[in-house]
Amino acid sequence: MNRPLRVLTLGSASCLAYFACIGLVHAGTLTAQGAVSVIDHTNEMQGVVGTGDFNEGNGGGVPAAVYAGQGMTWRSGLLTAILPGCDTPGSATIPSYQVNGAYFPDPVAGGGVASGTFAFHAGVVTFDQAITQVGLVASRNGTQYLTAWDTNGNMLGQVKWVPANDAAFIGIDTNGVPVGMVAYGNDDLWNGGSYSIGGSTIISDSWQWAVGTPCVNANDCMDDNNPCTAPPTCVQGACVHAPDDNGVCPDDGESCTFDECQDGFCVHPNNPDGECPDDGNECTNDMCQNGACAHPNNNDPCDDMDACTENDACGGGSCNGDDLVCSDNNLCTVASCDPMIGCEFTWQMGCCITDEDCADGEVCLLGSNSCIPDPNPGDGDGDGDTGDGDGDTGDGDGDGDGDTGDGDGDPGDGDGDPGDGDGDPGDGDGDTNSGEDEGGDSETGINTFGGGDEVGDDGCNCSTDNRGAGALFGLLGLALLGTVRRRRDDDLVE
Figure: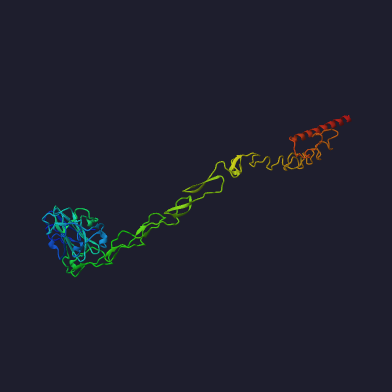
């Protein structure tokens, strides 16, 4: 806020608002800040209605009733509680009497009189009539301030007193605006200070209060700088600032309140529909509560950006999901989860489900699901069988020609006997003799298989190795027999 500044050196005439007047007396200075004027002499007080010389006693508390009878009341407590609408921080107390003339050396500038007793740690006062001028004798003890508010609680301005080892009468003129409250002390309230009773500078004597010069018209009144009041008018010699609820109240910077005028005051009621800034958390709601932005938790669906969770939802102000169960129902894989990718399945070395999962020459052993060397390497076709693929031993031609193996899983031709299909090596009668008669040839006496026993019909279901060699010996025997007979015939012919 740009506030007007006016400076006065004691001994000059009264300074009107928004002007600077300079004169010489002692070295102390008075400065007016805000919509007020400096009063530097008692003869500038117009229409005095009360005085307080503090000579009612020699100690103890100030008899407040003495001054209340003249329209002024000493106050204690928070300033905000003393005057509705006031937002100045700090609190006051009832002053006490003190006696020490050293605080007020003669002569007192500005026509002031020190009675010998003074108010100590005073004070904040209010008035029960339209007072526009207040003055007092200020001590030489440090910088002091006399601050005034209007009846709506708005600070009108203050007068600053900087002594130079002197005392003087100082006063404040609100230029026709009725005073709601006045505070005297060592705190710079106009520039944001908080009022306190501490400090030896709160020493004063000979207070006066007056109605000031009556106004004739509105031109004699000054603006109170309150956006919630109408331009001043002059009513029965006093400046009046009527409330204006259509005024534009300054923004308090809070999106959850309205800024509006009510009964001459700037107020900020709650705005439940105000917009609050996003706090960047999807699990909170950004909303107005009780005039301020709040961010209560919600239970909305969300994404926790973790590929290893599912059913993500907000809870307690954060996004959480259930752990994802990774399974491909494969005994040979190990499941894991990458938060960026999701489920992964890694094959276990050496594990198998079918033979195709094993290397060449290996088969899958079910139960342990491991690859082992093939116990039946077979014919190299990878099926684990011996022979031509039909699981039988022999030539697999099934032609009954006496060869071993005809594809039906039995030695021979399918009837269980070695030979040419009838079970016999020679005549197909199931005997092992090389002749035509069972039991062997009577002429040659050759019995290839020893004694004429039948092979394969005794129930043992066994077979003899090197069956091909036995047949060969039989053929050689037949050839030899033929040669012998031919020689006999030749001898007979000769």
